[in-house]
Each structure stands twice: as C-alpha cells, then as structure tokens.
Image (cartoon, rainbow, N blue to C red):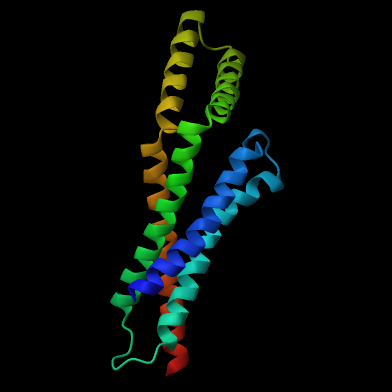
Length: 176
C-alpha cells in the first residue's frame, strides 16, 4: 500500500505542482479569466482524481482481507499529503528563487489595496494610510510559505477525504 501511496501522491502531486508553477511563471495571477483559473481548478481537481484512482486500485487488489473504509481513508489522506507537499515545494521555490515573480505579485496587490482604500470616501486621510499599511502587512503574512502550506494541507486533505468517502461508498455498493 505504501508503494501505491507514493506512486499516486507523486504522480498527481507533480501534476498539481506543475499547474501551480505554470500559474506563476506565465503570469496568470495578473488577470481574472477562465484561462487563469484553470491552474487553480486543477489544484482542486487533481488530488481528487488521484484519490479516486487510488481507492479504485485498492479495491481491485486481491488480498486476504477486503479493504475497509478506515484503511482507504487513511491511505487517501496520505496521498493528499504527498500532493500538498509537492505544491508547497514549488511555492517555496517560487518564493525564494523567483524574486521577480514575488515582487510582481506584491506590486500588483499593493496597487489594488491602495486603489481600493483611496476610492473609499468615508475614511480620513490618516485613517486611509493606517488601513493601507495594515492591509499590506496582512498581505505579506498571507503570501508566506507557511500560510500557503496551511491552505494547501486544508484544501488537499478535505478534498481527498470527501472523494475517498464517496468513492469507497460507491465501490462498496457496487460489490454487494
């Protein structure tokens, strides 16, 4: 089972990480179109597909004992853990080795923050600068590797758990 976890985790983790890198390397984060949303959607769908195929392969294995829900769920969560680690590795590579991309993301979001608060007519000038500074500091905290890692773990593990339960229940009903 460990071989299958590593195989499916690395296969779909590398696909998911490639989509993340394509998003940053091609500057798809700059615009809000369907094409720019494809890597984000793929990062949600790919762990689900990996878990689905993992559960299917476990169900097709010829063993002495049939696969139970706990084992299938634990294995699928480990697959999703490997997928999340692959994504975090690529994000860390972008953050520390591609300073041009990080600076572009930062400048783009800083300008959006400033224009958003400058359009607000209910704030005073001193209050605007304070809120802009706070928003920029919050943005810097949110693009850190640790923040991205927490988000990836939550997203991948929750997607994997839901897909694993649905797939396992669907397989067990078909076998009866």
